[in-house]
Structure formats: C-alpha cells, structure tokens
Image (cartoon, rainbow, N blue to C red):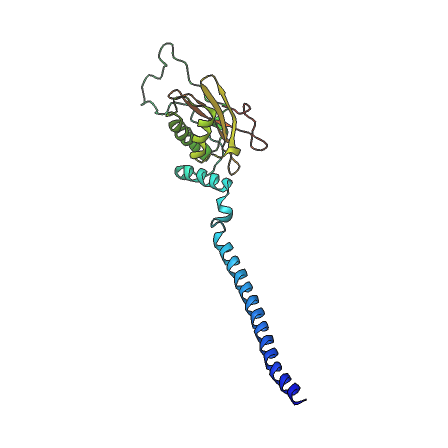
Length: 213
C-alpha cells in the first residue's frame, strides 16, 4: 500500500505538469492565430488603393476637363458673336463693301450661338490638343487613335462613332459637363487631321451623327 501511495504521489506532479504544458501550448497557439489575423488585417489595409473613388476613370476625366478649362470664363448663357465687323470704321470712312463681297450674316445655329461661354472656349482648346496629338499618326488606325485619345484623358465611355473610312479614322467625343452641350467630331488623317467642336443634346444619350456643327 505504501508503494502504491508513493507511485500516486509521483504520477500526480507529472500529470499536473503535462496539463500545464498542454494549456500553455493551446494559449500560445491562440495568441499566434490572433497575431496572424491582426497582421493580415493591417497588410490588407496597406495594400488597398490609396485613391479610392478618386481613381475612377470618370473622376480623372472630369479633372482633365477642369484643367483644360482653367483659362476659360465661368459658365454663362449662350452668346452670339457680334453681327458687325470686329473693328469699327472711323467716322466718314466709306462703309460700302468691296465689289463682289458678300455681307456677313450672323449665325443662327451651331456652336457659335448654342454653347455657353465656358464650352465655347473649351471647344477651341480641345480641338487644338486633339489635332496636335493626332497629326503624328501617319497611318491612323482606330486602335492608334483610341490610344492617343486615352493618353490625352478621354475615356472610352466618351468616345463614339469610332470607325475607319479609307485611310481616315472618324470619331466623336462627348464632352458634356456641368449641364453643357459641348462635343467634338474628328477625322484623323495624319497631317490632314480635322477636329471641330459641335453641339450635343443637353440630355439623353450621345448619338454620333446627330450633333450640330
């Protein structure tokens, strides 16, 4: 009986130490799992896009339009150009038109009278920047033209009627912004490239070929 008691006294501490070791191991495993979860969460936060919503193509497109319009006047109602000559003749000068000349008529439709001051100014700037970029294309394919337009900040959602006709690639740009009606139509043909502003409907989808020029 004494030997059995001694065996029990010897085994009990061993069992206690085993339980303590097992509990310690479990606690350590749980702690490591928690640390791993924290680490994953932190890394996920660091790897998320910095810009968030500001990185969306539509936001970048609006920013480009604002940058182009920096030197343009604020929004205003449509303005018709003066119907008379730009420089008034001095008193007493002969105001008769030269023989064979046609008296200028003030436009009644098109960009000149249907675009507000900001869009009218922006239209000229977009004409210039798009034309200059496309002049360098010797054989402008639709793919090449789209690449150039994308590099300038014009997103695919705003490029319409993009097609090749012979050696020319035609396209339209929907530049409506802040309630404006500005659009641009172009024909990329190397140094013969032509880009003109146009007037789109104030609302509704953009349909190529239905713009006023």
